[in-house]
Image (cartoon, rainbow, N blue to C red; front, side, top):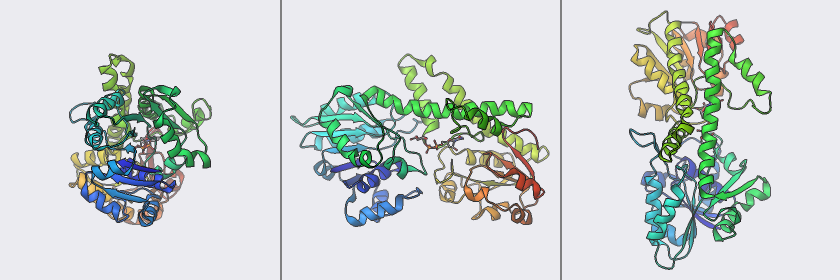
Length: 445
Ligand code: UDX
């Protein structure tokens, strides 16, 4: 099949390359010339394991091309995916849907035959039907544009696998699950290779439900993380161990162990903005009380960052002035170079503002971190960051930090205090090497 993908950031570039991998002919479209130039050369402008290989393969085979020309895209296919961003609006909780709307408003008048526009971006419920109105008013006479919603659940770091072997495919159609129209047929055909090799449930529903499935899923994940982090606060106050507790409650299949890792909490481009947009949209719909608890989920999450700073101050005998702290991690999670709303960088920034010299290392995110926080100090290796450090603080659970040899760090660091912001480090190994170990949610040193 031929298809286009509008917006070739994390979501769109991955989707485009994966659709080519499934055998389709794909045209990626973006307004950012630098991004398009890089993708044309087969370069992924961000770190995503496995993506460079399939991108290069399909750019070379000619099955995957990129353009800035909307006219070319309109001519190329009658199936158009949208994966542009829906960031948090400045100074508000609500999501900014202007990029999605722009795509529809620019594309619709250029279409010369009936087409399906498939939204993949995370949007406030009700967006798809407002996009249908834009399409109806902008499409030429006699051309029918059908807007459908097909939310994307991929995780950064596992984007290729999540796209090619999803847990489920959700398709929202204006006519609901009974529809057998062109849009449903086109999408099922596009995903047929996935369903043939790795069958997964396909949920066909109405537009509003499909839009809400995505935000509800992210709100649930954020709530699960903040739940364990709230319990972690009680563990700290009572001397209990949140990691053992999480293992024990996670053994109940109704609860499950995943997303119960206590520590510095969630960040990134999705969970924080999505829970805020969900609260804002619920409020607009008159259901603000229903999502009010998400405000608490957000505050618990933010409190963990402050608590990490308090624990660091305690470890430095009450003051950070003149202290050197190695902050291991800048990405919001491992296997990513994304520093959007990164708990690690937030903590590093707060430590620095309180007078410490924070030296940050991250295996992939140093470039993005430097651009966002140019005033922090950065080191090219974990050991270099630890040189002369009074405290070593692990803020992102990269495997190379977990595997660090405490004896090697002992040789370069000044102090012997390891603070584990992700409950990921082998505590006994560090203690055996003479280090004091402290983690969030696991009592005192
Ligand atoms: C998330 C959703 O998982 C994905 O389905 C959606 O499409 C986009 O948003 P992502 O932002 O890539 O994906 O990251 P995710 O793996 O969900 O982690 C989010 C944050 O939660 C990270 O900062 C991570 O460190 C944190 N986290 C995760 C915890 O603090 N504890 C956990 O147990 C799990």
